[in-house]
Image 1 (cartoon, rainbow, N blue to C red):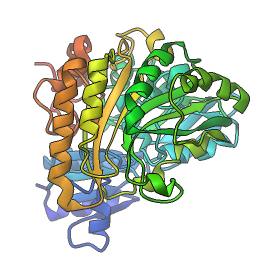
Image 2: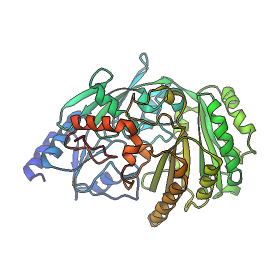
Image 3: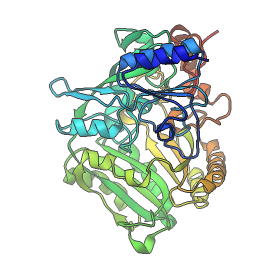
Image 4: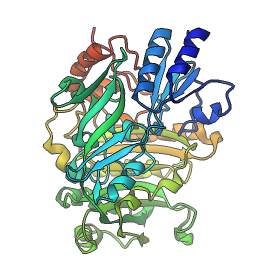
Length: 461
């Protein structure tokens, strides 16, 4: 543990603020997105630049402290914090610089997807991120990144051109296809195992106005909708990002009051193009199913669809997530999903199936650490509620749901949908044949496993 002299030296080396227990603002600084998780770090270094990150890494290593790294702070299992250690908090590092001529975007590691959307939309561009604008860019990217633009433009990591990384020894490197290529390979899906990324350079794509929004059916039509969606997806144009989910109609405006609190099936889509083309793209699905209770698809700016669900998921809710990769969706699996969704203990609980097809499949399985390019969907089951007393019910439901549908699914899961109570072997199963190579990269860049508050890849022996 660091002595007072070392702590004072560390404070003096920071342009940002060092927050400790007892300081004003400590509880705010340590609060996590997932209110189910409560951690009390010994130090929180609120870094403002790469030099601060270097100082923090060197301090932690020298003091033998456990290290957690927080980017946008959206981690479901609370991996952006730790007990009794040092949190390297990047949330003050929010610069975004767009190069419209090159169609690239330089993004600091504390940014959210919404920060980037705001900057790129002015130039008619977007980077493929997720479906919630408050999601942190760093964690999303390092885990892989799936969202509305994935079918046409690939995973977030397929659009990453380089990353600046502070390594465990305090040195700084730029990882790209030509510099530290093995590290660059590992960063694309291998999580925060290899260092602290301080900035990312992404390729951006022309995206401006889109035809997007949710379509909801009552649960009695869920089987018909899920079967139709299953058949529709392979032939849908790649400009249409579309996922299916089992949910509850939120008991609040602007949802139709007569349907508040009713179980539902939803297809939520985003077509990158004119509304007329989007309507044409959706028509085969909508013609194959009963009439929905509402169809709120319409033209909107791309940042609007990415932020559409933000009001439902403020910081501090209770969250319990379970994930799987899914290759096929037989009728028996659909039946299991519907049965489990009907038991949801709160109105915010959900299951989503995000497509893994199109451009994702055009990248070789071993081209990045993210290994499951032959899946069809990435599934997430999320137990969510505002009440802490619901925590155990959310866990019980999530685990039972996952147990019921997992026999239909692949062994691994998207690492960003995994909690920290997963069974041994889940991380290895997720990376498959890439795991051994990741362990070798870990041995080279973080041989002492300094960065282990994550879905951890241990250094090769």
